[in-house]
Amino acid sequence: MPVPRGLDSTLLLLTAAFLATNFLSLGILRGEAFQPAHWLHLLVWACCAALGQMWLVRHMPERDRLIFPLIMVPAGWGLLLIDRLLPAFADRQTLWLPAGLSFALALATWRPLLQVPAKYSRLILALIIALLIAASVLEGESAGLPGELLKLILVIHFCAWLASCPVDLEIRPWLARQGWRILLWLIPLLILVWQRDPGTALVTGIVLLLLLNLAAASRRLVLASLLLLLTGFILAWFLLDVVQQRVTIWIDPWSFADGNGYQVVQGLIAIAEGGVLGAGVGQGQPGLVPVVHSDFIAVALAEEWGLTGVLVLVTSMALYTLRGLRIAWQLRDNRFGSLLAAGMSLLPGIQGLLICAGVLRLLPLTGITLPFLGYGGSALLTSLLSASLLVRLSSESKNGPP
Image (cartoon, rainbow, N blue to C red):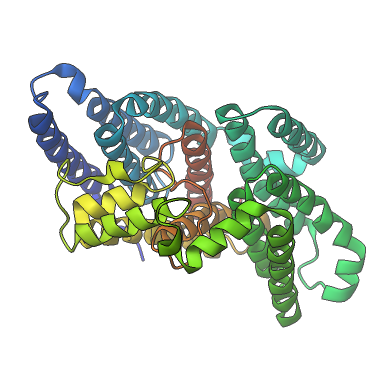
């Protein structure tokens, strides 16, 4: 379905009005409405939105015009939420947004971009190994960036490899010849699990298996994929106490409300307090939830904007994923482009689904941040890079194969 001309600009203007109204309300509550520093985060977002839109209109007029607004809505909302919760952290996120967006837009308009994964596959493999080593050596936030980039590059490299496989492949002989490659991609996931980051490994693993099934549709392959996921979960259960702890808390958080289950219980209470319309910005108490600015930022949104806000967020996430899958369908004659578009839309989509399901206690917690919305410079950068690839691919789908 074609996007009406001007809809992207209208969405950005509506988002700007929504953010300005809420920043004003927050400023009045804090007594900072007339202080220029209070408006800095909104000003940076507005500049990014305006300049990014002008850049795309000039350099990529044939792009999918919904992608950019759909990433700027949660990015701006995230700045507002983090400013409301921890202003110092919002300052850092405000630095990451223009830096990450500038790099992503420059990358999107770089002509040889889509030829790099196939042309320099060995170099990319070396980069994956280097990122694995860096993630193993570094600690804390420094290890976050290699881990996030590793997730993105693994998916890109996997798409390039799948695109080189025959279209009408037979599953058994193909797996017999290429099974070692699948094991090769499992190694980084195992290392991520060993580093006590099962959430990132789970998201990446699910996306890789979905891409494998898209490239070689087979009922046996689907069953094998489900078996592989189940095996991975069983191994993680026996090897990692953090997995056992999260599953136990998921089953019955109330029995651990004064300890490890405190975050989940407070999150559920905050969501219930939000009701349909929410308490209003600055009127709730989301600060009672530990790590609310990152893992549980959806809880803060639910408490202060209610079910209405959650539906808006989920709708924007779903639209982003669906537009990406639509681009993949449009590029079905270009196998690599189609798989890459699917991977770049599924990566944030699966991640958002898992974290939202975790805070709602539909699934165990994964400990990952909500794409574009939650705090984390490395996570924001990776999300912007994946979106830039999607924008570039949408432009290629209108102009023909790259």
